[in-house]
Length: 78
Image (cartoon, rainbow, N blue to C red; front, side, top):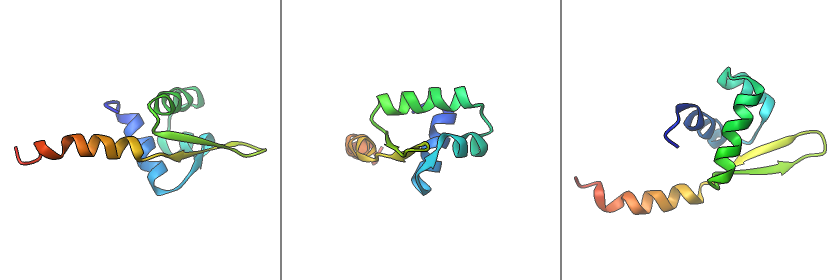
């Protein structure tokens, strides 16, 4: 999550599900770079893959973000 490109990909997926090709265009990263970030996000549980017959579509899974938000809640007053 600390990596800027991963946050950008999460922001893009928040708007709507996207293919790797769309993420390449939007982020201006190369295909292997986007794939690397998606793998890390998938390992963290933040991304789900919908395997279309033609391509893979990536969707945001916000549940882990809710868990982080709940953990941070008591610290917001500081």
